[in-house]
Image (cartoon, rainbow, N blue to C red; front, side, top):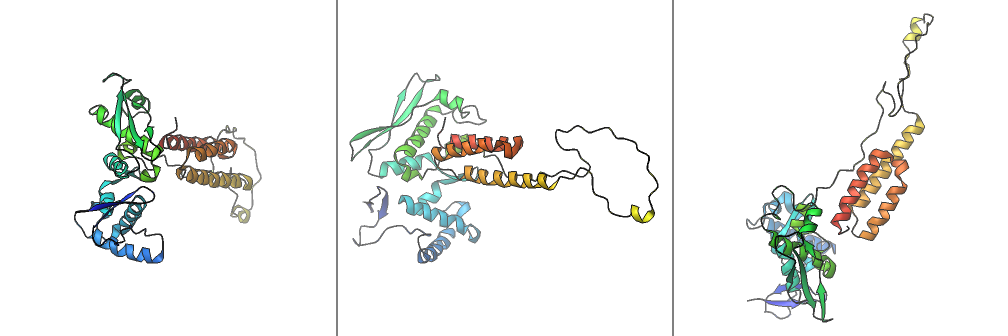
Length: 318
């Protein structure tokens, strides 16, 4: 038999009822050097278990277990439950929707999540809201309305193999729960998407700047080749013909400096976009991106703008 202990931040930990002074706070591996050492021992033991998912098994996956331990410490959940419900989609971690709903229900800060449907079932206006009540403020927390029309507009509905077409009611509830948790209990979701949301969003675009060099003998982009001129020349002594001649159409030092500046700027903006956690910060980056369009050029600017738009949707922008 286990009891539950409510922590100051509203998260829960499963504890043994005896002894009463048992310290059950999960270890954060990155809080101190001693924690890091202790977490490694725990991670090795968990990695030997056949009951944990494959991505956590064995010595080579020890870092994955360490990250799972850190997440478990942050939300006050069992490390095993975190490993069973944490998925990597398009290179980013995400929760299963049912696990996120369970975290909200067990937090004791809110009443259990409930779902309110609106509109006519089967129509584009059919939608769902997640609702719970804040126990301290006695205030009803009403989430965003998620409709079939929204799912179609965002491209979730029409994806190949989409469960929106086969189980729309369940998907409406899952998506409504994810939106609700990121607004009212972000400390539980840690800002992460649910697995179903991550699968519906297009994979991130690689905006790593590619070297932009001019091959010897090629004309610069946008410049029409001039017709060759035939000019009679005097014979050149053999010794002079063996000297290395400069290659035609090589970029000038100023052009190379401009290319390096554009690539460095694109790399910095790309990393900043990928690491953005708030819409306000991302919007500020959008302004910086537009201001740098002349320096970046059309190709790099276009790729960065696509990445910015994808991240904007991930953070809940419309």
